[in-house]
Image 1 (cartoon, rainbow, N blue to C red):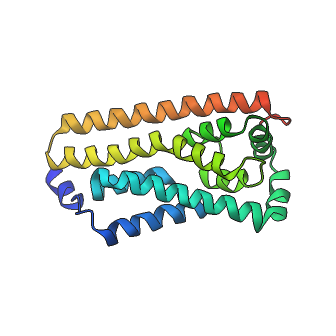
Image 2 (cartoon, rainbow, N blue to C red; image 1 turned 135 degrees about the vertical axis):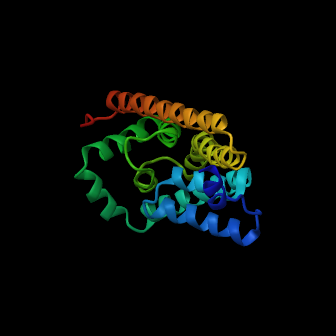
Length: 199
């Protein structure tokens, strides 16, 4: 079984075209509701830890683009949309009160899709530089974790080590549990700070 898996999981050389394609995928993911964790794992499988800086920088670039689009191009339309969603409106109010702290927490684990928060943050009063710094800091642990899981999972399969593969799966379970706990804590903070309660 591992022999079959190995043939599908080669770590490619970190070529410039390959990493450029990966970067484009992360930018698109930040704009078009493509989940980031699977992209991080795929990047780790294909390019190893070389995918980490590419994933972090390109995810941040995509988040900044969404932020600017929301703030300067479609602000009125997006405001109408969030006024129909109490949870999103609560997040906006919380960011206006707490600033970069809420942005950082939501980058670690968010009760709403990450792409939605990219656009949502553009409607708040947070400055671009605070948003960028909080985004980088918040994305860094999760991005590294999922890229690392893809890298180690591939290495475990290539080495035909079921023990290492089991450790990788256990690490993934632990990471998901931590993300869930952070998301619960974020919900509690938003419920305390926001004007409208979360539902």
